[in-house]
Image 1 (cartoon, rainbow, N blue to C red):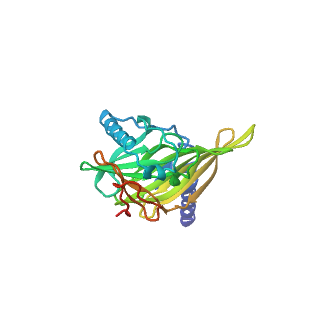
Image 2: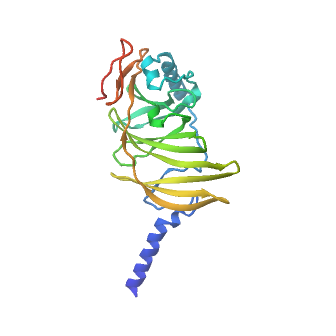
Length: 285
């Protein structure tokens, strides 16, 4: 009788961990999972301090002032308006490329619906800026609308970065997140995950779906999605494990120290050619 009761309690516990904790938006979750993204929560935009805003404005002015032909080529040759203060998405000091804290500033690379972004790291007064071109964002009518950090999901002592991407196609509106991790000068994409989509099936009919992303932290983090469909309110329609989609990110390493800004290097495999005498090409170290 005791063994039968123990088996029953274990079964109830497993079922609770797998399903009951995900019964609705905002409900309790299993203790070993952390929320990675909730597309149903209101979007939060960072409010910058005067010092943070001053640093971001300096970066924006530098990017506007020293745009090179090589950078415009990397952006797909699209006409970009000058960056504005509103194009700054995030600034935070935390360990990213190493276990030592550094300041990360995330600013769009091109105003408007274009899909390129810059990541600037500053430590001990030295700033290095990476340009992530539109290929990360599949180009088109897409734009990065937010950025936030993840609290060390692989437990290596460093944070990861999530970029929120919004856009639309002919029959749908969509939102997704791109997760990046850093190691030295290397950038790796851990995955691009759709988290919200509204599809127009006809002029009078649409379907809307959303996915909350959860992660089990560890040296090999495990990602899960709780799927919802909008039908007389949000209804849970599934819970699944989501595979990571690791890929090497092609990026340009921009030199933004002081007044000079040229392209310092490009990722291996990038089709690059020098266009100015001060522009030097090499693979990132």
